[in-house]
Length: 252
Image 1 (cartoon, rainbow, N blue to C red):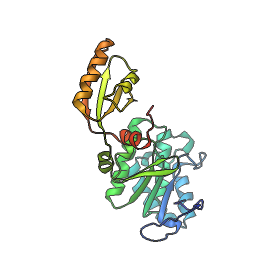
Image 2 (spheres, rainbow, N blue to C red):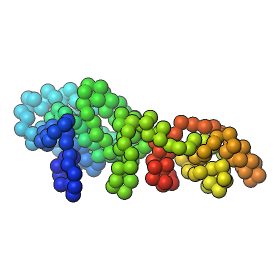
Image 3 (spheres, rainbow, N blue to C red):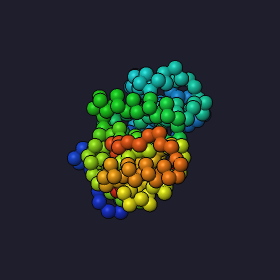
Image 4 (tube, one colour):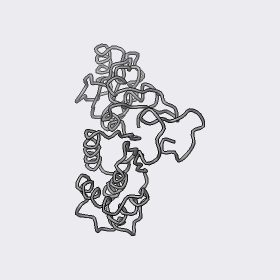
């Protein structure tokens, strides 16, 4: 809807305080949609020409952006020969060649390795520091934590909007992080001192109204079951904790 590809059933979209045409933003879809049988540079040329940019302008801008995305040495490589992460960088390069006021990215790091995700976000921070507004959709809450402002959606509806720090302050409970020699600690949710227990990788996040009574109760229950605790400490809530708290969903 922001891109103008479909019309909203209600409401309206304004950009920078008013209505803008498609030329004001660059869009990068989740699925790679460029031409695999063309080279990196050929794809950029075609994309730029769709916005009626001259060949000289495209090449000058491409050289600058390819240095930023670290694709300069791959200009002559066919898109199909690129890795998944490099294809995403090519899509980003094409979106940037029109020099948009706003960049719209649809889950740009979905399905790529953690190292690429880190590198990609460095590029986004560079663009934002230079004044570009960036709108990102992501299923990764750690990426949401990197944004200046976040809107959390549940079943298509916005449940909260604010800076990550502000949203974390909205959680009514304290969060205790636990790591033990047993992974399944769902039974902790049965304790009266515990409001919720959710699995996060190799650890559990336990939401509690009061930290110290909960720690005592948790330690007692784990001891009764012969489970050894390696970590049990209060932590700052993560964006996953915020999402779970606001939607009452369990993180898997």
